[in-house]
Length: 260
Image (tube, rainbow, N blue to C red):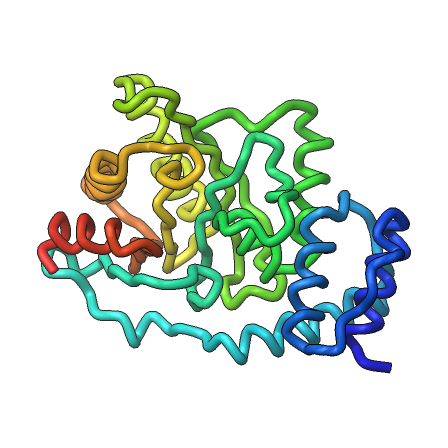
């Protein structure tokens, strides 16, 4: 049986309300349907056979997208430890990538949503939502803004994912408290990476998408917080920080601030 058909049938068994959906013939459409069903699936065990075939499929997709090694990205003029890269963060071969998560920490449940939370969970596989669910059950409460949790990366090139919840901006300008919370997201990730003795970490533009933090100010806080962190520690395992951007606007902002 076609592996994608197997995965789709198993997902539909777990989501009986979607059993009526006809499986498409086109491979790309099968993959879109698979991602959609994965996005809406509540945390649940799917069995060893499912995970084995899911992992094979997601790793094949990873190869097709292409893995980006840090050696291919130039350091910035501002700091040799910093790198700037535009693209899909799920392609980066770093020790860890940062996910801009929501307070439930379970990923995005909107099918095919274009947020980074959806992209990371979709590329990592269902196991990531399961691990996040265990963290939340043990915690017994929503994840506070400005903190971070670490999980495995599963089918991502990155070994780990750091999940942090940024502030949600409801006005045109962020308040001082919201700026402090965003800075706390970056510090929490750096400290957690340090605890795990990681060497490389890729930051997304935390809070700037669905959470509406002004892009320019968010970038300024990101860079200054990371700089201040390295100035405050005597020794560090972290050798490389990647500022990962997706939008052209963020690329222009970071290029200016980093002297590229």
